[in-house]
Length: 266
Image (cartoon, rainbow, N blue to C red; front, side, top):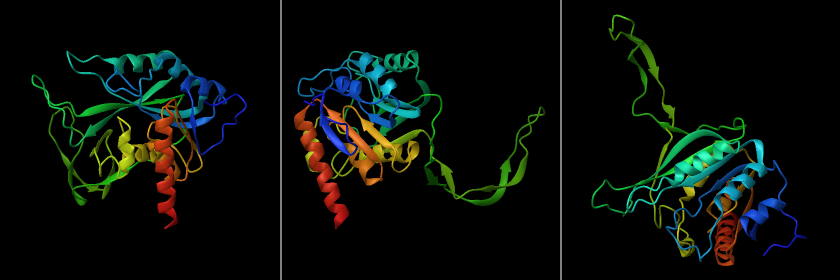
């Protein structure tokens, strides 16, 4: 475990209980946190548990005034939806975070079928802020068609849908529903990552890093698991700090960082 004499260096992974770790961090020091907590006991993270409310309060303390927290979470659905995600969202609001956006992480190839309801294929990505984000680098996607054409204008009281000449742009800002393939090749090509029981897609982490931070900003993951957030922060020229209570998971994360660094040198 980390001891009290250890300095918190950037671009470093730590074996530590995240609550005790954040108590040692400087207040208002993190630009962006991206993390996915163990919710509803759906996975056995080497038997470790977490104290949500204390973690939330510590995250509020270490987040900069205009910093962002991306909290990726779902709900247990067996026997009915638990609504854990909603309760967590409301608690974040109660301690001072603002809910800037409720985004959806849609899984393209989810294998989980339900016998009496539609297949569940999403998790929430709560985008929480102190005040308002200092950074928003909007991600765009190509439009289906572009150029000038007659477009509907605002209807008046007569209800007639009039058209005027307008331009369809070649690109548009993405929606807040982000879709990713999951599994080997989708989530990541790092086979070692799947020694961790729950890995979210590298592209998901990267898209949030690009959206809510700038180069050299500090990106934090207090439950970094296999190290996805830290890896993508490094590859996108951000500083990072990651911690996890499991030494085994930190070793996986370290190996992934080494593999990524080696590829950069090729």
